[in-house]
Image 1 (tube, rainbow, N blue to C red):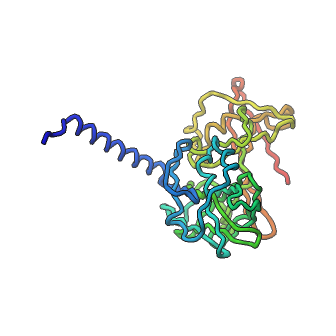
Image 2: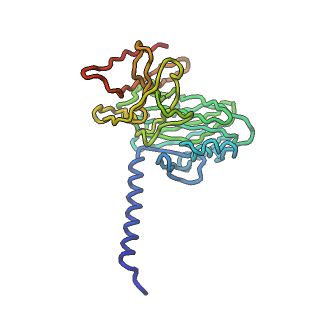
Image 3: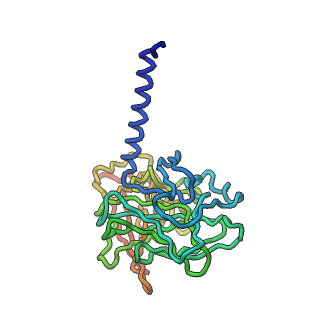
Length: 324
């Protein structure tokens, strides 16, 4: 029997080592992520955003996998959710069905949890549903869906235990279902709840204001955003006496020592008021709410960066007023 040439053996070993290194790097990059494509039949890495998605296996034992109707699948082929949205898991039995997440960092750490929902007439009944989401025993939000449009809900919490249960609760207004479930670890120094009794910070909106490349429905997320926050591109100041502008210059994020780590794509664009009584460079980024049964406390986060070259010796001064 002839022996394989040494160069072939070396090539095979190098290829094997490269594959192992790629797997290790991928795992290291996403060590604080739990990303579930609900209803998917196999694990995969999304080529557009570079995140590895798992199936439901090991996270939940109830429910049934399904896919949306063919006419709704084509609408999301080019979006960053084109691979995830067509599949889903629905729960025709039981009032409460829960995913169990066990983040590697454990309890008393900050986590961002996000869920996407697309009805897409998966049951061919043309009937959307409304249901509640809970985190462990705490109410998160109510999901009320349109026929074809997708929605997402996002929350930040610091759990006192090592496991997090994301529960879909049937409230008698249709069968609950879910398309995508994601968890990312955040530093404990950002998005802090004021007290243990207000442990959930529920996202109302997060907007990349001033983008000069406005495309309806476009988002900025991982890998542009290290924490995989979803930044909606919108014209919230359009025709309201504001103008957009942006810069292509490099922004030195290391000098700011900012633990929020805002993505460059968001910070490089802004809106400027045509009236000098307003801030000239304003990037309105996110609003978080702490929900209770009857009232809301709102937390508003503004992030500023100077992207215009000012005359020597001048500084920009901004006064921010927030009113309900």
